[in-house]
Length: 174
Image (cartoon, one colour):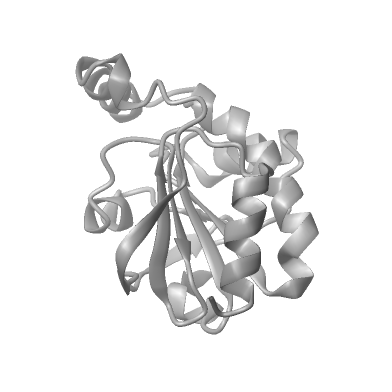
């Protein structure tokens, strides 16, 4: 079930034009002058408060997504494969759902896709507004020092060789 607010958000994105997030194959763009990632605290799907600081010292892929977003659902399996490949080496993937519905709906969606990385629920859009995301999906690759090193606006294949190279480099402190 999609809430009225989610439908309104989807219509707003659609009004921006297809070029805004019709981005299959969107590029992984390095940030020229890495800046500190904005701190946040939000609840996970069990209601526990989680902050970006909880992942200090790890490489973090922060992905903003929604259950109603087809490109989001399409890219999530590649994120899961990346997480399985590098999670034990210091990569954490944080899926930040911007859905306004109940956490159970988000959890059911994540279970359907067999997602094992942490899912947080930005139900009130506080974090997404703070990050000024223009739509979903949007991803930020954050280095071990907590700086945004890469970003992707739109759908991306997170298991592509380019993503592997970026993650390996950040894990090695490059």
